[in-house]
Image 1 (cartoon, rainbow, N blue to C red):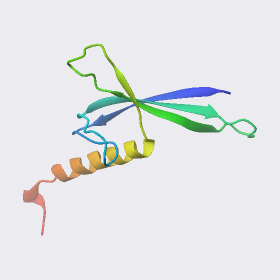
Image 2 (image 1 turned 120 degrees about the vertical axis):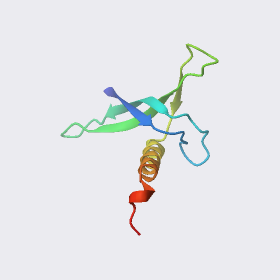
Image 3 (image 1 turned 135 degrees about the horizontal axis):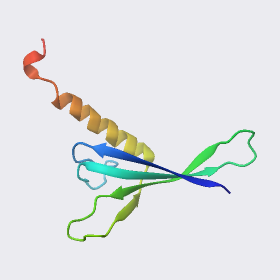
Image 4 (image 1 turned 180 degrees about the vertical axis):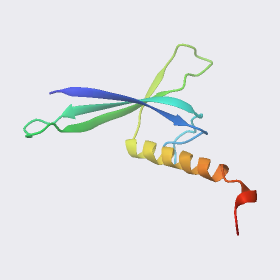
Length: 99
């Protein structure tokens, strides 16, 4: 079984939630790690996502402690889209909007 880990960083401009019932997380940059497994028996390389994790912003009360949370990648995509949509609404200058 061949595994690989993809790393990326996402940035939220304002506080956000992952899913409707999740706790509110602060704005900032977050490291995302996605583990994928190579599917055997296919004539070309195909990877299947097995886990997606987010490194949460450290709690100032507990320096040096890092928390990793398993997340749903669809909820991450939705939260990023909502953050981007809010940025578009905030950046509209009302004086320049025509009726």
